Image (cartoon, rainbow, N blue to C red; front, side, top):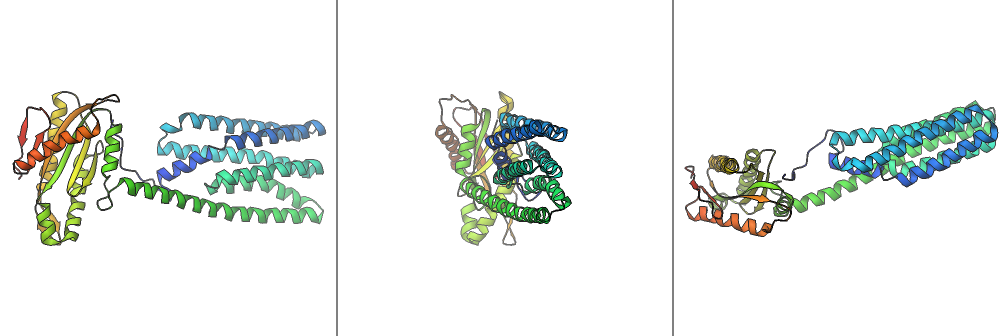
Length: 382
């Protein structure tokens, strides 16, 4: 299987690779979740046993159930995240958010119950648990602000309502201050999320620059070599060199040459299709990699692909508002790749390069097999 070298886009402000990193970060919060589960569960049970209140007991059950669900989801994610699709990542983001909100409901109700009962010790304990959960949530979940905003709103709402219902002015002022705290938390989480996403985007942009050709947008030599090293099974490696590119570049200028190379990249991408990979190796040389079937069918598929490429590149290009014709020569190597193969990538590239230069020496507009393949085919598109 040939590793994909072209990223896909996902609708929305966050691209798939960025979102994947953000959700992966969410699910690294297992130590924090365990800590808040132990402290919250223990605190709620202690309040229920000390007071004998049925409300505390029911809330304790809710906290323990939601905590167990969160721990289970964290474990499930860690076991299977490597195989997730983009849609799976979105689903697990929602699962994390639902779990955080559900747990917030339990802690919020604990504070509400303590305030309604006039249990000062219980109110103090539940408020401390809420703050601990809130701080831990911000440190991880702020990468997805909607989780912070939803969970904190559910967490603070019961406390604010209970505080406003108390006759004492201090409780009412405390409720107002808690609302202002939520507003500040809301802005802080958004700023933190924006900064974090921008940092990830910058890192991925640098990584993309290191593995993509800045002119054509195609994967570069390093990316192609990586794909070749990680490929398995029977593949066709096709080296493409443009015929007549230098004359166009010299006659019309480098700007026209750049435009021509970008158009060549578009045609090669169309020819290779989604099952293969195309890279710019440097100058006017390109490499194609595509899995093929075993036996004669695989060789026929490699020749058919090469023929499509040579014919596509022989059609006119429009550069500087005028038609330009070039051609292409190709070398073909069909080989079986295995993890313990004795032949390295350098040897494979050397073999296909020899076939390419044999086609160039024969006059261009041709393709030739590498190694001891008996068939020599020539194009009539030169």
